[in-house]
Structures are given as C-alpha cells and as structure tokens.
Length: 247
Image 1 (tube, rainbow, N blue to C red):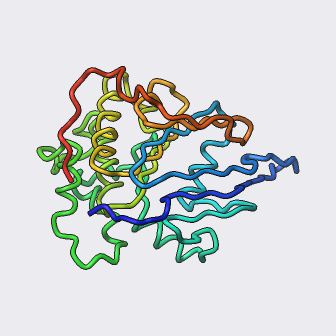
Image 2 (cartoon, rainbow, N blue to C red; image 1 turned 90 degrees about the vertical axis):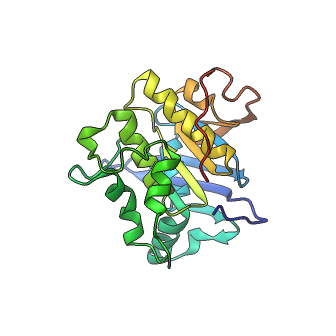
C-alpha cells in the first residue's frame, strides 16, 4: 500500500555538501540546493558529470549527510536522525535502483527480491516478493538466477527488490546505463507504470531521452539547481504500450 501524507515527500532547504580530496583541495558538490517534491511525482534530476546529481541522490537516500541545510522526508527531519535510525528509514521507506544491478549471482530472482525483507520489521511479508516481481512483468521468471536472465530482466529484478518493502520513495540512479536502447525503453515503461499507480520516483540521469519520460525535469550544474520545469510531453516519444500497473 502506498502511504499518504499532507507533507511533501522531499523537502530540501539550502543543502550544501563539500568534499575534501586527498590532495587537500575542497570540492563544493552541492551549493544551497532547495527542492520540494510532492508525493506521486515523477522527477528527473539531470546534469553532466560533476554537476552534483549523484551527491544529491546520496543525500536523498540517506547514504550521505549534507554539510549544511535541512532535509525533511514526509515532514520528518531525517537529516538529524542517528545513523541507525536513518538505516531503518532507508530500509522501510526508500527503494534504490542502480546502474549496476547488484544481484546475488547464485540465488533466484525471488530470493534476490526478498532480501530486503530480512531486515524489515514488517509483521506480514508473505507474498510481497511475488507481488513485486509480477509488478515488473517477471511472474514467470521467479526461480531463474541472474545468469539466466537478460540485462533488462536483471534490472527488472532490481526494481522489484526496490519495491518489495512498498517504499514511499523510489530513487533510480542511471538505471538504464548498462542496457541497450530497447531494454532501456522497457525499463522506462515500467517506471511510467509505477508512477501512474501512485509511486513517487526520482530518476538521476545524464540522458535527455530517459529524462523525457518523467513529468518534471530538474537540471543541476556546478552543484546548483539551474532550472526546474514541468515536462508536458512526458512519454510522448515512446509509442509502445505501457505495462499494466500492478498495485
């Protein structure tokens, strides 16, 4: 079930992040970034290499802390939480999809998808793995290992794994980067379907063709937001049918 809240799912206020290289040089990865994303939005964050988009994704996913500024997730001041408390929020409320699939090679698709449930405090987890795989069109591949699946199918397994805890927020970091054009379009169709079913999706990408599938495009350069615009033509470039939503 997709949670509801009167608060924006993401509310960043003047976030900055500076790194120090081994040489002692400082790098301002993010500079006073403020961003609000409402529940149910499909937003792409785009920019060239070094623009700060991966740093922003890490902060959104509670994988890194900002040097200054505030981050509220559905109204909760998550930036101020302890490391352990952030880990619990990350497991229960945020799903991740990465460019590399990060699947365990000797386990089935279903076992890979069910792995986050091992660390979950949910009372009832029966059938969640099967439901997540069905949602990405892999109901007939549950017992296959990654080696028995195509690259696109492996990424579908990774998406199902991100969905299995029914998170509030889905973060996808260059999810089509290791796929050919046809498989990439299929993955973006899945994201569109998930968005239509009410999921909040933030896509990190350098590819304008992938960003064109989202409803809103935020552009970064030199650690700053330089534009934030609605995309009235989302999905229009792809005339292929969207997979049926499974909620």
